[in-house]
Length: 303
Image (cartoon, rainbow, N blue to C red; front, side, top):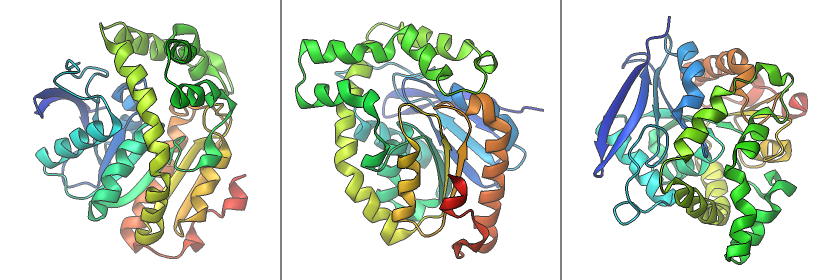
């Protein structure tokens, strides 16, 4: 039985909406969504974890049910979103957690983790890049946009936030598209329809180039602090390839891989499987700490 609560909290003069499941005293899992989605993407996963974990899933400013502050009151960059999430966790007195990061949630969580490594019990990374290998040809218009931001290059990336592209993004790589609820992209589209949201997304997509610049810093964090890490990846993802998943093995010693037979939004088909992997992984980390990877899954077995 789901026991998720739906709350708002003031953080830096912005009202953040968040989902909270489970109870304090259980291991805390902070779920960080990608773009242009919201904490809605974690709705089913929270229901499968809340008997075992304390789950927190905030909507970033401008996304989901959180306030869309005017740009002169809130700067929409990954740096600022990460600082807001960090303040959100401090306000709730969270001092130790597992970050579950999907897509663009990875650069949000890794900013916090690399700044405050003592905060991190473990990491769960799903279809989100920290290595060059993960980029696919889908990103070529974005690379042009990063290189020279003009009206033409901006127009080339606006399709990322259209109905057809969002529908494709949810369905692409899925084993059975009839299992993918249209509520997913319709909700994203409804949020995108708020005045000014398209500008926020374009600005954040341009700001994403700074995440790429930070990859070496995050890789250094991996090598120096060795956070136990679970990598879950829709292996048919056209946005971030499985090469980006397997690259985490380069710098992390305690890393467990599971490549799932689905696309970028793996929750829509593989939520039960994902929940099982998360429960087993976090239990192992909490039981034996940073043990050697004999109990994990060798990278070659995940391919």
